[in-house]
Image (cartoon, rainbow, N blue to C red; front, side, top):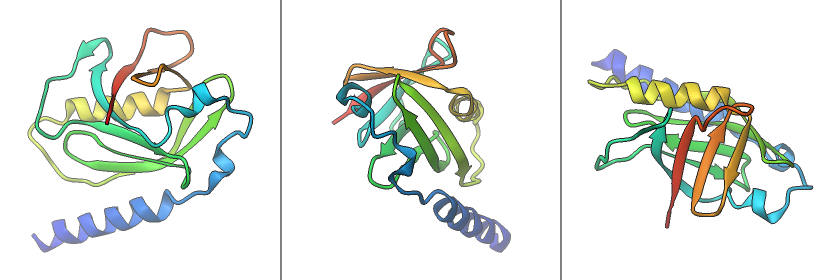
Length: 146
């Protein structure tokens, strides 16, 4: 039990220590349409073309404009990292880390982490966010939570 607590504390410390960034990760030529993905909590609703089951504590991502970092919840673990946002709806997630809790079903969470590592562009209309790799079908879809 003590080992699990120490691992959790270490993971949380590493998570928050390595994700701190400043606004240098945000391209200043972004238009307002690109910037709509920032500072919104995005609830995961579809992963690899399949609907995500409704649960009490839903998976989500949030890109924080001021800090230049992403945070979220994968269904079992909290996670965070940095991001680079560039004109033309280009995005890249960097230095991702998560807590290391074990849950009965972690397949969807691992798939979300895989999607974040693959993503290189997005589409956003202010209500929905889709993450893509090149011109593939959407890897994930999210809905804005207000």
